[in-house]
Length: 193
Image (cartoon, rainbow, N blue to C red; front, side, top):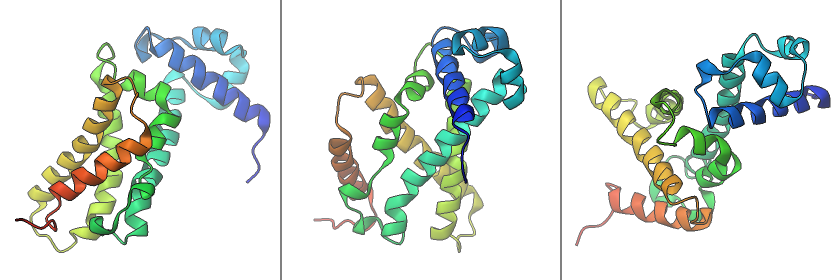
């Protein structure tokens, strides 16, 4: 699939402008005119690609979530969903967050409405559901699965929020080591005693 470089540049300009505006105001308060002015594109070009500002955000979130999904699933696919076989170099989530750090700084900011967090939460939870289905297909306790999904989604996002609170200072490679330790400590396969 070949991408028109002008379209890619327009989308990148709009995303960058949207992130800048989201640092100071909620999505609902951002106008198309304001977004176009900051992105340095005309309104006609905007409407060629998007119907409104919400669609810019929605499509950007889709790009981020798809990248997050790939980063999340990579180690599980390589280990055939066996946590005990996972190694630090397989983990890609923290590299993903670094790549989209501007977005995550907004989503995890205490000054930003929780709706952004919940959009991210629901998106991450939905792809985790696909992964969990492979592991717990035979479980008849649907309530347990629902709570397990929320628990695991919040565990991952909680790690990312903590990293955000520390200013993303810790290297992704160090966080990979920490995550392996956490998974080892919380794994039902760990040896006691």
